[in-house]
Length: 286
Image (cartoon, rainbow, N blue to C red; front, side, top):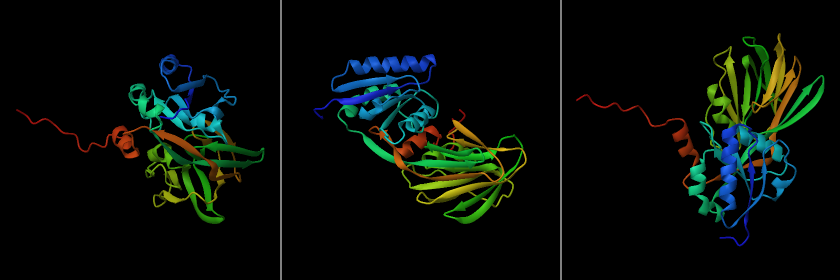
């Protein structure tokens, strides 16, 4: 075990009572443990600079809480261990009981930190240029239900195709199990250096999802939208877009750092969360 205490930061920005109660329980547990230093507990959007001193950030909630945290970390990403209080939790896959049971391994630094692709999104509209750092996906779609939108895709300046339908998604491997999966996209291994582009309800059924390298520039130009469009980043931030506007996506300069506890793995999480137990078994009649 390292002679230096493990410096931990608790992030619990969800104001719902069960989240705050879990954060208080976690705080009390950590204060009773040797070998750790609790450097703060963030319960608002203000993060200041305390995260820069942390060895690990314990994010209480679900995957959405992790998405908000890594965006606020910006250029100084801190390894994140998610404490899951939700239902799915592909990123926050450890329960409070898991955390306490594995705590000797955590304080002994016997965990794995894996680096994952983040994206930088730049949106060019008549109002100016907006930039976003994200982890899951960018969705480009009509701003009005049941209205079609045409979006032209270019990769490194080469025109690829035009998507006509409800819209199109560009997702990281982490995001491949989110909106993209619901739209029929493939599951990418989380540490794969690639993006997946998934059409949303395409008008042409031969248009299929594609996977390409993460070191390329992806440009989406709104070719036609009669009712207005919208670009949505990680389901949390949005920008109105119109005909001729451009959405550019490339790999960010920083990686998201995810902490994996012992006996936790990507495929084990998929198996558990997606119910990959095969066909249901029925009891034979007596």
